[in-house]
Picture (cartoon, chains in turn brown, yellow, cyan, blue):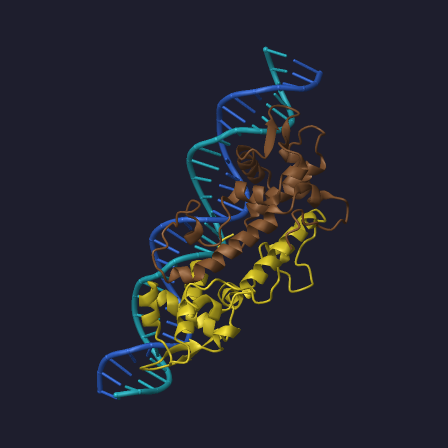
Length: 149
Length: 149
DNA sequence: CATAATCCCGACTAGATTGGTCGGGTATAG
DNA sequence: CTATACCCGACCAATCTAGTCGGGATTATG
């Protein structure tokens, strides 16, 4: 029940990008330095973030990355899914939306409900926190956007 | 963001134990067969479940395992923690209750709230489902015990 | 144009983790 | 005494993780 370092770094880096939103692209080398993350590892991470459409890039000198959407429109769930694929606590649930993957045993389905519920709550939390809430206002507490509790 | 096979097997096996509660110990070989789990792997899992006090064991012929508590007093969170240790989505949070582990960067703490919230929701879901809800009544839907939403 | 900065990307790797297996204990019912 | 069961440390192959490496393509600047 752990998130990878990829995700942790990804979210941190994205929050830096959010802080400097609308001030031109930020180079990975800068982000890596300020967040104490391996530059080359961060490169890999941003390739995935770009492919997922969460960031845009400018190549060449003075280039870098920028948020593809306003900070208020990117949430942590988006980042996690871009870096780790669909969020699902057990593979049994991974079947493509509706078709049960390979849950042959009726036995297994006794426990299926728990994992489904768990998956849904995890997604709710992650999808409920947006980059703009992450960065400010300073010392600000996290607000739940969708008011789901 | 995955649970291990250990946990999946553990919860399934425990639900079998709950089904046959108060009818003497059940041997691992039977459970392994009925749940299609490697017997020797299941042995390892049950050593941990016993050490955590969730099951008791009877050695020798006609021996086996039984629930150490009524099915209504063992929840999925107990099982997960017995088999995987404390539930925490990022290591940054793993510090022993109150002392922050090694969250030196003030940076990292921008994201800390999210992980804390996530950890808490995961624990809520897992701690909210008890073995007796898992096994019955047949086709019964999961009820939330603590009514937290 | 030359150069440096920067993104892009496939291949590689050391170490940890996972999901087991193996071999041999010890206890107990019959 | 023997079969059945739990107990337990050691081992193992495959996979995953967190990087590293080397080079290529693109662009601002001098």
